Image 1: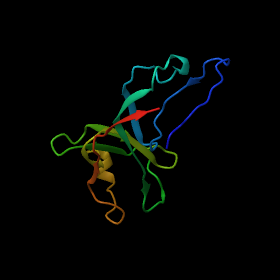
Image 2 (image 1 turned 90 degrees about the vertical axis):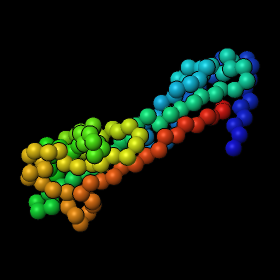
Image 3 (image 1 turned 90 degrees about the horizontal axis):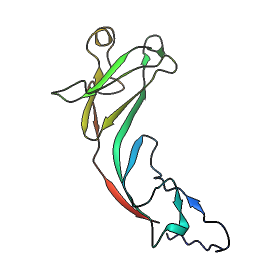
Image 4 (image 1 turned 30 degrees about the horizontal axis):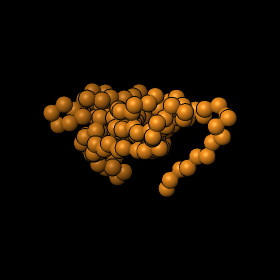
Length: 146
């Protein structure tokens, strides 16, 4: 799909912003552009606006509840990592709605309860998911023309 703009030259130069429309859990960053992507003055664009973006992080989000009480478990700690370094990323479950999130780099990760009180008192239910949840993502870069 092409975007064509017809502008009246007597009007002030329009100001545009170029952003990626990606899922909310993707943390995308512009890594190259000859222009300030937040303040693109159309009058200063010679031919086209080019930008290169990279997927830096992915948010892993979830909710957890005590299966017996059907209520959130505030303070429960999750860690995400690899077999050799199991605690690269960590988070604590929020009291409201049992929400948690972790920001992880691209790769393959295992999500588990933190060693200590969290893993001594609770376990991840076998009925809803695996004990070691595998989180996998690939790198990707894209070039976009406007």
